Length: 105
View 1 (cartoon, helix red, strand yellow):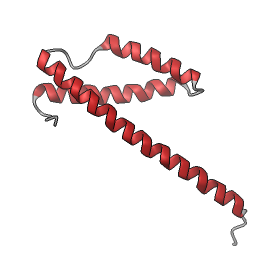
View 2 (spheres, helix red, strand yellow; view 1 turned 60 degrees about the vertical axis):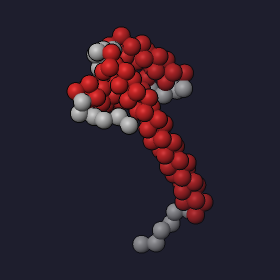
View 3 (cartoon, one colour; view 1 turned 30 degrees about the vertical axis):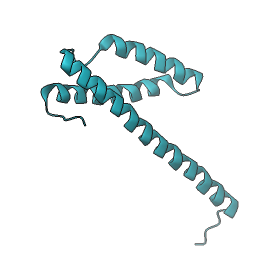
View 4 (cartoon, helix red, strand yellow; view 1 turned 180 degrees about the vertical axis):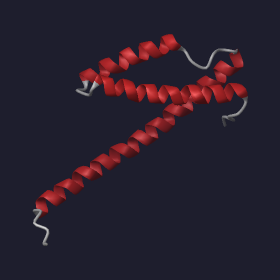
């Protein structure tokens, strides 16, 4: 069976996918930068004997991110899930830093 997809549709699809790929790359780089800073926070907290998590800060950040999401026409519930995933990973790193299991360069 021959492909009857119009060439212009395939070309447009490839262009959109290239943009998506570029955004994905930017997200990875931004997350890497974010985790560099959160590792520094983890070291400071460990050195000062502070707990790995800060529930009040997390609540403020969730409210802030949900508002930003709504302003950007992104589902606030999705934004909150995304932030919760990141925060859980950050807390895990902070716990490992405090226990000496994670070495931060």
